[in-house]
Length: 320
Image (cartoon, rainbow, N blue to C red; front, side, top):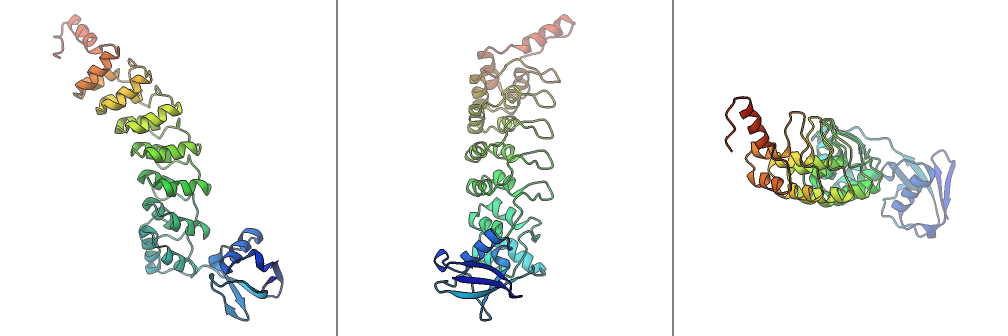
């Protein structure tokens, strides 16, 4: 039996030796079952000797536990932690957390260590930081969480890990973007699928009234558009200026996206608050292939209507 006591002599726990492998496992159990801080702040002593996390626990013994406060952090240590998290050097992150450093400490990059690990896709470093108590939903100066940073960069595995750890899916940054919107805008199809499977809401709008579908459509990310349409997102929802996903795609010149939206029966003749339809926007921006796609799909030729109206008012018709 392993008997663990506080320095005061008060008994804390008694655990059968057979249930543990090493000191790391014991510290993790004390954290999970007895409410102690994470293992990085625990020190287990046997006859006054500090036992390292890899020390094998294969015999009964009496242990004393010491809980450490976080160390004061120098600029160089903040830089080291940021560099190690950014570059994915797990051994160095482990060593710094063992000092113990606060995992929520600012780094020289102005990002938290977890955000740096997330944007570079370092799952094991993210795992260490969360084990040490990193705030998985902390927002940086632009309102981005670690999940948003991972989504923006298409770091699907670390994003999946953060979701499994309980990161909130639909938090918004300062411009109202969610992780899903960022993944869709940057064309990270697999990342978007993982977020949707985790329950991310695809109907939310950002500060400018734009949905994930609109962002993907304007950016020309056809596979993401396909995923969102399969999810049943509202293809005809309009942004603050009245533009739909079809209008954004037509204006930006993304023929494949326009074809996808037309195949999904997106409404072709809606107009934005300026009175422009997808046909108008395609023509105005010189996207004649898209103009033809729209007309072939039965979109109303508002260009002819405009010409007729101008002629009736005494103005010369617009030249095609």
